[in-house]
Length: 240
Image 1 (tube, rainbow, N blue to C red):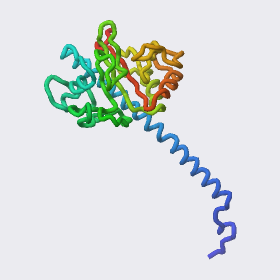
Image 2: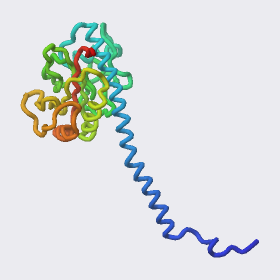
Image 3: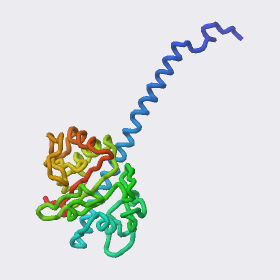
C-alpha cells in the first residue's frame, strides 16, 4: 500500500472548522428568525378564513331570526347553538376554534378562541357582539349602532402588541369579507380616531382610515396590553 503523505492525512484546520461552524450558526439563526414569522403568517391566514366564515354565518343567522339583541352572553350562544344546544341557532364558528363550555359569565355556552389563544376570562378570545349593546362588558369595543342599527363586531382579545399591529394592518388590507365599516384597535376607531366609550379623540391617531396604517396600529396596539381588535361589519352584505 502506498504511503499517504502528510497532506492527505491531515484533518480540518482551525480556520476550516471556524468557517463550517460559522455557516452552521448562520443557518440556525435564519431558521430561528423565520420560523416565528411563518407561524404568525399561518395564524393570520387562519384568522382570515375564520372571519369570512363567521361573517357569512352571522348574517344568515340574523336574517333567519330577524334580530339579535343583548350583550355577548346572549349573542354567542345563538351563534354556537349547533354545539351548545338550544333551538333556532347556527354554527357561525369553524369547529377548530371552538373551545368547549366557558366559565364565569360564559359558563352556559360554547366559547371560541382565536388562533393566538391567550384569554383567561373564561369567555374565549374570539367573540361576536351585538351592536345593540353599546358598552358590552365582555366586548366593550362593540359597534355603536349605525343609522340603520345593523352592524355587529367580531372581537379578537388578548393579543400582544406585535400580533395586534400585524393583524390590524394585514386583515384590513386583505378584506376577508365585504361590508367592513370600521376597526377598533384597543377601543379606538380607525375611521374617525375616536374612543368607543367616550367619543373623545384618541392620542396618536393622525393617520386614520381603512386599511389600518402601520403607524395607527403601532400606536394604538401599544396603548393597552393585552390588546384587542374589533372588526365592525354591516349586518347585511353590501350589494354591488
